[in-house]
Length: 201
Image (cartoon, rainbow, N blue to C red; front, side, top):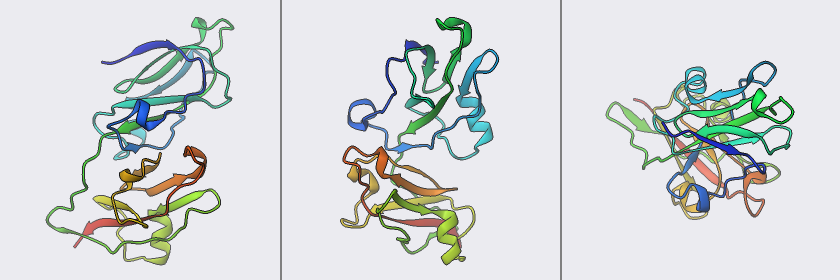
């Protein structure tokens, strides 16, 4: 088990090229616990139980960030463990509240026998806060899209290439679809994306 005890010196904003070169799929941020009693425990096992099919079997990187922006605490963190902060280990005997997300290596999506790809959908444009190609929003306009896709395929609209070629920090999973938030990008602007779903035939 890869667990590291570190002093968090700054709010972590992982640059994918530096910290996660082989990972291409970040989960959303999870924040189940709070440090009211013993500390803050954002464990992989707990988040996987509460969010089935959202986190891959073997995350390669975990990112933790303080919800208040205050940092400088001693914590334990690892991709196959998650995150914990113990109150009595801190100078003031109190941890901050943290959220975590996990990064996974994903290959080209496969749509197995008995399933088929839908058409590509481009519901949103990357204006204002970002590009939101979520399953729930797409199903409002295209109710024929299945409720529980087996896989998703996301491409950059301008090139037609896989979303990973854009090198942007995004969140995607079959049960939710795809989101890209401008605030998470180095240049403050997401590309425009399109998505298709692998559904039962």
